[in-house]
Image (cartoon, rainbow, N blue to C red; front, side):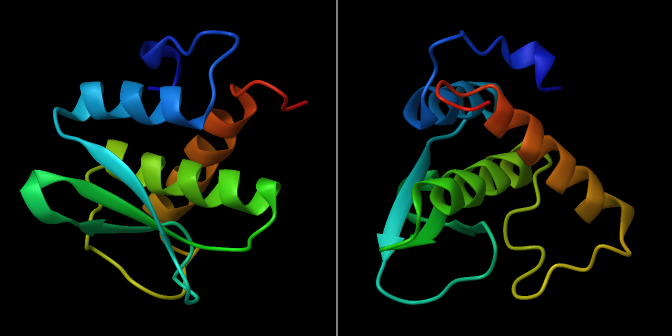
Length: 111
């Protein structure tokens, strides 16, 4: 799935979000909020948008991880399915986490 996105070598988070949006056929927007959120919270936003909520003040690494996890959830159409603690005993949650890691590894500046 990640390979099919054809992420260019110099892609950033915005580029990755645009690729995922094109793949799923709806806009994806990162929304910064001043509150803690579930890990990579993906929610329905206005105008058929998907929102990835990310708390302000996170480290660059954690911000990237949260966005990539939200994008992975979007690829798996898991919007609104679960909120709160991730249950890694579920195969879909483990797979989403793996895809998030793969997406993150495709971004520029990530080793």
